[in-house]
Length: 221
Image (tube, rainbow, N blue to C red; front, side, top):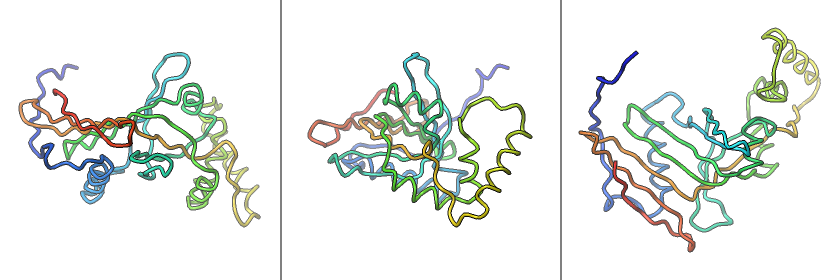
């Protein structure tokens, strides 16, 4: 299959420095809100890349659940997601907390790349979120241990789900597994990409400075 002749001209928007906020959280929030308002399918979905001690990069699609401004660091921003701590990504994060998230909204001709360090959020916050999930999703979290582990077949997985469903049928609240919870990617760099005609795309990068301010820079396409 050869797609070398395929071309699209991106002409829906622009990024001009004079029109941009000094803090990237405002622009990120605005872009996510636009994607939601446009009713894109899972506009909060992001590709999330990690790399452990083996130096082999690994990427997967996750759902961002919150945009944050961490209270312990003036000027910073973060994105929160939830997963199994014993997963491959959890092992990578334990070995190397540096990671990158990528949002791509094709119909808006926009992309955001967030680089930073990952840390666990509080157990209370994870627990509150866990109990707000649908009950079947809570049970699935128990089934996923160890996430990415081998399973004989689909039937074995379904059987395990039914076992946990029966186990928790008499409980008023399904407990959150100790191996499950939230992470926050705290950004030190964030790049906004807006497609433009003739491949003269707009790329604006914000770099976090030691004093908590953000340095805005334009990158060549």
